[in-house]
Length: 438
Image 1 (tube, rainbow, N blue to C red):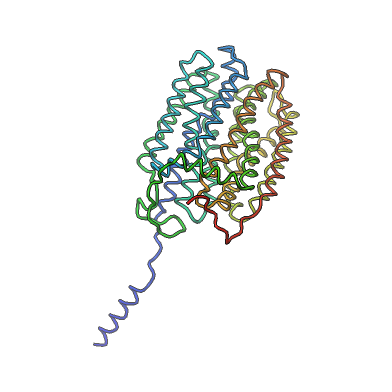
Image 2 (image 1 turned 180 degrees about the vertical axis):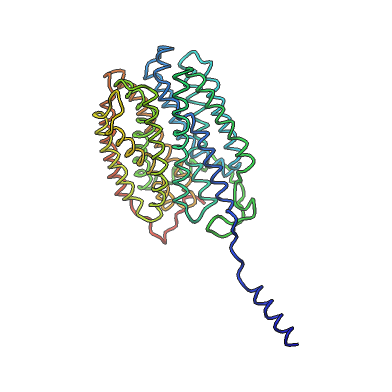
């Protein structure tokens, strides 16, 4: 009898013991990995514009301003599509939106092979590719991070942001070699194929919500999947109008516009032709941009780690101030050959390239709560509008003055302004509700 009681007591103790944590990798990390690969595939096109300005100018006689206008349309649509894409993901699911976006990028890149007029460049590069890449922009990363992660959000944001730099690291040297050896058309086909290759991974491995596979988000508690949100476009516009009534939105949008102007609009679009103006080979300049991509990955992930631990406002101020200083020195560093000061600039600038994204997204989340992904989409839109303006105006400045120096100096001054804007963003009280819309 005593033996039975002992056995019963032991069984009860075992059943009352907490379950051991699973050693399996949480599905959230699989989704994050698929997101990383998807952004790389979609970002392949972003490696092309700076490489093709001179070849298109030589073959068709289009001015750098015309080519820059096509790039600016792409960048503007990239940003303006993002908030609507985030809302569409809430309505139709991540997988469907991303698969269609990859198809649009592939279609635009392939169609450009047969273009003969500058308006076609603006249609294929500007409209189709802009809509496609915009649907896989940082708002896509924000949606995945918000749904699948509670813990490590800053780190995951840094990793996913670094995916764009990883795509640059992979495709810039490859596309530069293809352009140099075989012309710009095979490079455009390569970009289209890169987008199409990613589609099966998205369709088979991506899931819209942790509840789809019966899981809680990483570091959080289980919650039922919400019903699909209707009126995606209306919601995106409503969130914009609500956020636009707050001061932090304009400070975040303004500083991020300067971020876009000083990265995508300036360095990504005009660094290669500017270096070529100083006698540097296109392949060498493209390789330097690829090196920026290497340190961009390191800097962005490290920035995500810092964002989990320090005040995002101060981080942004430091990032923008250092970027502005480096741009002021760049015109003195451009030369036919790569020398140590230029290498130092590339490493320094690479660490700072999109390190601004994790703290900016953290501030959006702090200020706007459940609507933060859509708000960040609009902040990203301002980033791309800033990039678009400099992509166009940089080409015009080169046509008019014969040099990019004025653009470098102006961008450095703008970065100082962005640093001040970041410092004056007010903190959100912890007990204040942050959802903008019902």
